[in-house]
Picture 1 (cartoon, rainbow, N blue to C red):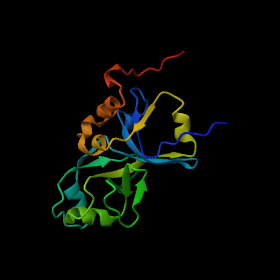
Picture 2 (spheres, rainbow, N blue to C red):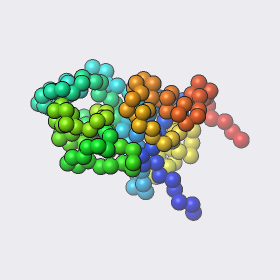
Picture 3 (cartoon, rainbow, N blue to C red):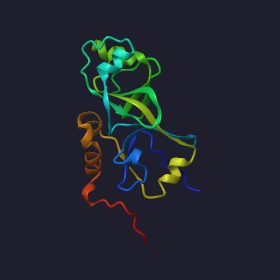
Length: 186
């Protein structure tokens, strides 16, 4: 039996017609993918009505010099739980380096550091995550629905949220306008 290909530190892009409206045009930064399951942070959709300053205020953290940027919909699992996906120039309590691409931190110290101007140079804040049980994502990958591509930091941190899906496909050499919602048969 061949060794499975794991997608940690890659982007997972939803194909047109994925069949689940929660993942339509999804861009997921994969953090864990192994024989035990998979977990990623959605970086392609803003949560309407929630900004970083509002979130910090709810957490009783002075926003300080942090820009008031939108908070992202990280995924449908534990939508009240926060995550910061950031550059690898900062690490704190509970930070987990994901390959050579980015770091994931889910503790308040990163938000405090960002507010003080002492945090990572590049970052995204999200609520919730996308999760798959053991073998679930591997099974989904055998059907029409997902496309995996290497992470490019400019797509992750410098591309407008609403453009990440198309930009990530274009960076992989694929014109998303040519993608179809129905899989073919050979």
